[in-house]
Image (cartoon, rainbow, N blue to C red):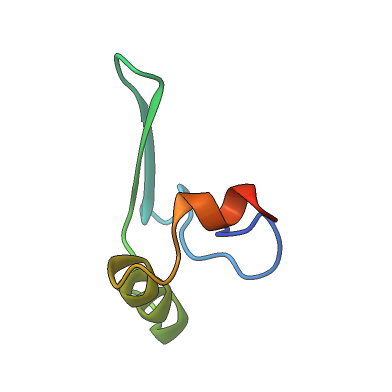
Length: 59
């Protein structure tokens, strides 16, 4: 899983830190972001509202 489709990888299916499962609406994506300090920082920024889906649309 890459946050912005470039650069650092935060989770992978090959090491079981990323799960992608079809559901009734599309794909359910779950990522374990506890494995590195960069991933933890990304999670905290998302949780704090500093990074949102809307920001990505404006890129």
